[in-house]
Length: 171
Image (cartoon, rainbow, N blue to C red):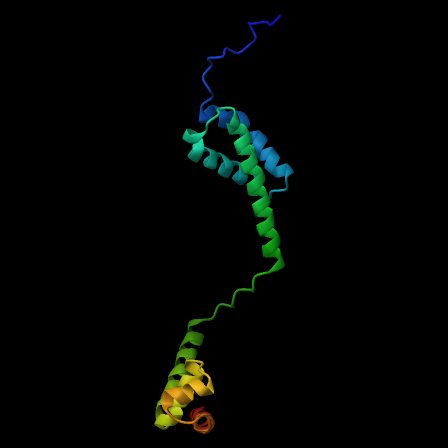
């Protein structure tokens, strides 16, 4: 015999989202923690947020808890995988903070370099700009300048030499 006083009626309304959250949030936090998440509260909250986004499309009211549980498992797995990858590739330390003086000095050096490049003969300047600013090969430079690759080598070599002398004189 079935005791009808303790049985739930078949026409009972499914729990609301708020009721489901209140009833299962802590268990989802524990699940995420047991699975190894370093931020189990965030995982549980994200899982319930995703459930809320799909709440109207759930076919079976009883599947909501299973759906949240699978989301918690997947999110935890993804975060652990991400952390493993991050730890394999440590970030470079941030550059040391440079004062205003450093920025001024660098700007002056750039101005000196650009002025020295502008004073070079046209072919040498073209060869250096195409080589070092545009990173073109000797063949590509030769095509752009309409000269032979040997001439490119000559103009580049002479330009670097003249640039080095000009920058030493200004120092």
